[in-house]
Structures are given as structure tokens and as C-alpha cells.
Amino acid sequence: MTAKTPASPQELPSKDRLRLWLKILKTVRFIEAELRENLRTEFQSTLPRFDVMAALHRYPAGLKMGELSGVLKVSNGNVTGIVDRLVDEGHVVRESVPGDRRAARVRLTSRGRDEFIVQAAAHEAWINGLLQAVDSAQADEISLIFDQILAPHFGQNLNDH
Amino acid sequence: MTAKTPASPQELPSKDRLRLWLKILKTVRFIEAELRENLRTEFQSTLPRFDVMAALHRYPAGLKMGELSGVLKVSNGNVTGIVDRLVDEGHVVRESVPGDRRAARVRLTSRGRDEFIVQAAAHEAWINGLLQAVDSAQADEISLIFDQILAPHFGQNLNDH
DNA sequence: GCATAAAATTTTAAGCTTGAAGCTTTTCCT
DNA sequence: AGGAAAAGCTTCAAGCTTAAAATTTTATGC
Image (tube, rainbow over all chains, first blue to last red; front, top):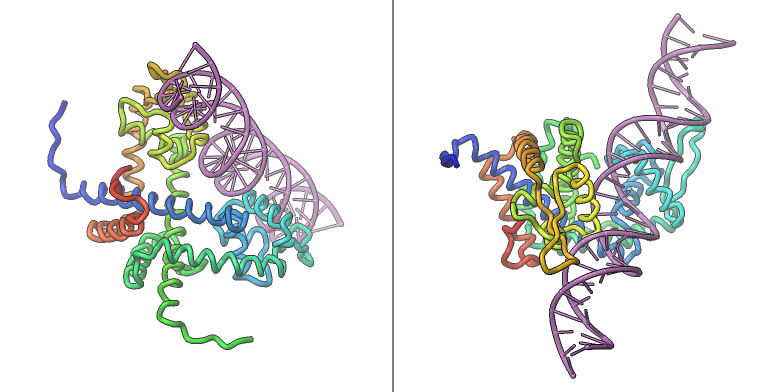
């Protein structure tokens, strides 16, 4: 078979970036698996439900379904299903929107808010433990680099979430 | 309500780590969405199928189902479904294992290998473009930090994937 | 040789996710 | 005023994912 030619200068960054991506994926999958397991065993809940509750906790007046879809960056159909289950659990309510019978506004119930506060504290502690090897300077550095990754695609509202 | 006390020194790293985690998630979700869209429109395929083909490409002699599950860090049931579809497409075959009728060994077909080589080149180019803002030094740095995140949980075989 | 434990994979139930279609309602334009 | 376009959400089909159960087969121990 053909001999390997020495890597040209522009070849290296491409392979580096691919290796970086695979490392990021491995790390994220590991952390998500830990969070999923903890949420399931300690709260009988799931990551997507936690994410929805987190988003609604940031907006006490609630969000419309389309807004929730936009904040979470998931499809409308997905949001419908997750909200259905949170409503079944009593953690969330759908309310009608005056003047627009198409729309629905989704809000945490007081029971949902109480539950989320407990889950959020645990979640933060889990993340703190899992990322214990990272100090604040490193966290800032990685965050800035990831901002640079996102910048060409997200314009001004980088910190929006 | 109670007044906010100034953040204690040990509070800061916890919030920093949580913010870092959210930033990592946002970045990964964005990149995965781009890759998914590209694979769907250009190759009529999906990320999980690509991942399976990538794993099998690294092991030309093939992998058993359980081994594939271990390499990809997903459940056995998930692997069964994805392999079913790759078999339907003709990119992968299941072969019997001499001496063990329970087991099956999964291998890329030559057509699968040819297809994967094309998809892999495109995938690397997409990653290279999406992570263009990251240079090799930064990639190495992030990778080392993520290794530190994984180290307590993975022991020696950090580079195995 | 036989009973039990373990292994390998598939199947199952439940949840999540996308992208598109469907339905209803509102807005826009003439 | 009325029709067309757009909006808001749900439903649908297909794929992915987990965790556990089920089934078949192999290994182990006596």
C-alpha cells in the first residue's frame, strides 16, 4: 500500500480538532450519564424534565410553548411531550393566553418550584463534584474558548440561556 | 426575605463549574445539531449510525455486540436497534461466532467501509470548520483538563475510544 | 451427568428527539 | 369583508436511548 507522507502543517489542526471533539463528547456523555442516574434514583425524574423545570424557574411568569422550545433549543413536538408529563406530575400547569386561543403558557406550580429548588441544589452539587478537577481560572478559560466556537453562529446573545 | 450574604470563597467554584457545564452543553448541542443536519441531508444517515460505523472501522475484524456496546458506552438494546438498521442498509453484517451460538460479531461490509470513509472525511471537515476558532495549543489544553475530569472515573485507559 | 449461575443478545416498556403534517386560530392584504 | 398566509401547538412517523425482563446458550461446581 502507499507510504504515509509526513503530515503537512494544515493537516495537524484538523486531526487535533477531531480528537478534541471526541474528548469533549466522551466527557459530556459520562457526566450526563451520572446526572441521569442520580436524577432517576434520587428524584424519579429525567434530564429533559429537569431542563424544562430549570427554564421555567428562570421565568416565574411562565413561557409559551414556542418560547420554551426556543430557550431549550429542542423541537416543539418534544416540548409538548415533556410538558405533558410534568403536568401529569403536578409540577407544571398549562394556562390559556388571553386573546390567543392557539397559545398556551406554561408555568411551574408551587409544588414544582419547591421540587425544582431541591433538585437544583443536588444538581449543582453533582456538577461541582464531577468537575472538581477544574478550577475557576480553567473554567473561565474553557468558557472563553467555547464562546469563540459559538460566536460566528450566535451573534450577540451568547450569554442567553 | 433574607438578605443575600456575600459569596463565600467556596461558593464561587460551584457556580463557576455549573456555568461551565451549561456552556459546554450549549456548545455540544449546537455542534451535534449541525452534524446531525449535515449527515441527514448529505448522507441520509444519523449520528448514532455514524458512531457505530466509526467504531467498527477501527476494528476491521469486527466487534461482538457487547464489545460494541462497551466501546460506544451505550446500552446493549440500543446497539441492537442501530445495528439492525445498518444491516438493512447493507453497511454492516452480523456473523455467527464459532463455538458460541449466543454471540454475534458485527463487521462493516466493503460497501459500508467505502461509505464510512467518505462520511468520515466530511465529518472531519465539518468538525474542523465548527472548531475553527480553537488552535492546537488550546485543543491540547482543553483535552488535558477534560482528562482530569475523567481521570477519577476511568483509571488508565483514558485514551481508549 | 445434572443443576445452577452466568453470559450474550434480543425484546419490552417507557421516555426522548427530530422533522413534518395536521388542525385551529390569528394576522395580513386586497 | 373575505381569502390567503402565517402562527401556535399537537400529532405523527421514525429513530434513538435506557433499564430491565426474557430467552437461549455456555460455564461452573458437585
